[in-house]
Length: 520
Image (cartoon, rainbow, N blue to C red; front, side):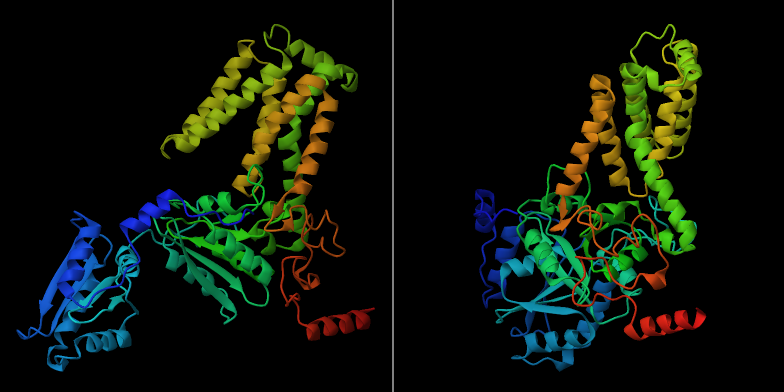
């Protein structure tokens, strides 16, 4: 990664607008400054109050009505009224602070920038005349979408709850699965305008300290005005910014994130999105599903083999058809060659152009199905795929064989569990089609060599993307192409874990060996 850059002019202007100055002791001067900095904001509420007509007991309550929970505001008002008889002239600030610290989540500070951050986080801020400090009370409005089944990662067996757009709720969904004091959480803020809350979660001792520090440093070096989704973070901190292959696992399933944490990965939570990033991630991780660990290991291994087959079908099937039918007719059985030639009689396009048009058409239908309203999206996709395909064949525009090839390719692409990896493979498929259309199978082999070299070059937070295949790790393939039994996967993934590398306790391992010898 690049070294931290100098502060930009935009950042200097922002610091000029909101300088790092402290509060004064004059309450009304502080309020004037705050109102000036916020400008004409109708949702900024400033209430100046006085107890028992005592001029020495003047304080102010500030909050943004669009952020703050109304029930919390009402309950805080009742709690303040109960303090009227307990406040003396010189102890207004300390009395309020000590009272709310005992029953609420409170923060204290003296800088204006910190005060603004508390207001913009949905908290209520208290200022007391004569005091140069403020304290804030947690009053954030937590209304939002309830926990429901994930829309993109559906499973037959396993937990059905999914993340939401609420950061604290997402953290809770993971914490209730890992009840251990070693589970650590660090809060960061990114974005000069949005001040988006980012949380790093990891298990101390299992996660590698160098990986944690590297992710922390890369996030702190981000200089951008807004962070609206976790993909912003991924694009900024990934090792190879120009690679189309994902190097961060994005998941909306809490059990998947919890499993990643137990392997030594670091989870990156972003406020406002139901997707949580996990890093580092190697290529084989994108072909695994959380459901693999909820079925028998033989069944799960069979499912993984089918996914890897789907990977090669999606990547190479159109290119192989184009290359063989254009340059290598001798490789096709005679009867099949005669059938293909008969189908192509009268077709006005070459095999390459025919395949390219159909692939692009299907991608358009896929995109339309995603963007259309849910009530009519599936109907549009089915009508477009069936009616247009059949009509194009009957009209002699396309051959039936290329329609079958494109259909098989499209179906196979849906077998890949990770959407980002599926997008990368579909994009690479067009490159292979162009190479096959130019020089046939030679182009496909050249493309495979270049793709393999590229995948071996990629890293995810310093971890080689093809681990444990390249570099080859002895004993590290128990959870790659096949899913070995849980009791046989005694160590965590190589290169990711920290000090604690064992999944299975040493005592259990010895008992397992003893039982195995007795059985023999």
